[in-house]
Length: 205
Ligand code: FE
Image 1: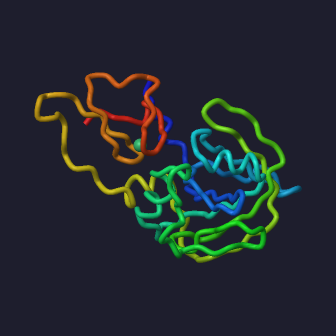
Image 2: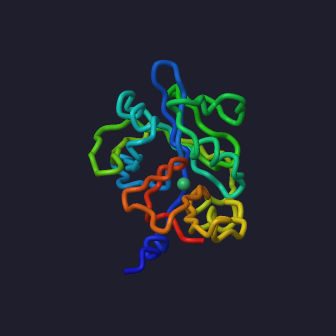
C-alpha cells in the first residue's frame, strides 16, 4: 500500500474562523466542500485538537476564507502552526475584517469568504464533520484558489537537506509544516506537535 495515494486527492485550503465570548480564532483546513445547492450547504472537517473546533461546536458559526495562490507562508504559520488555546492568532495581524455575522474573515491571500451556520456535527474520529448552511458570501479577488498541491510546491519553504543527526540518528520530517522527529521509527500514534497531523504525514529525510 502506498500511502502517498492520498496526496493525489485534490483539496483547497481555507482559514476557518469562529468566535466565542468575544474572542476570535481560526485554523487552516483543507476540507471544505459545497454538498448541496438547495439549501446551500457546506460540510467541513475540523481536527478535534484545534481550539477553533470547540468554538465552532459552541457558537455554531463559521467563516470560511478561501486561500489564494497569493497567500504567503506567514498566513499558514499564523493560523496553522499555533494553537488558539495559548496564543491570540489575531494579535499584530491586520489583514482581516468582520462580516455581518460578527466573525472575522481574512482579506490578504484569500479570494472569497463564506459565512455559514452549523446545523449538524458528526463525530468522525480525529475530526468532526460540521454541516453548515450558507448565510452570506463575497468574492474578494480574482486570484486563483490555492490547492493543497500548490501549497506543497510553491508556498511551503523547500526543506534544507538533512538526513541524519550528527550522532547518526534518522530524522523524520512532517510534510505539512517541516517539524522534525528524531528516531529510527516514528510511532504510529505520533501527532505532530506543531500542525497536529499524524505520523503518516511524516517522511524519512
Ligand atoms: Fe507538522
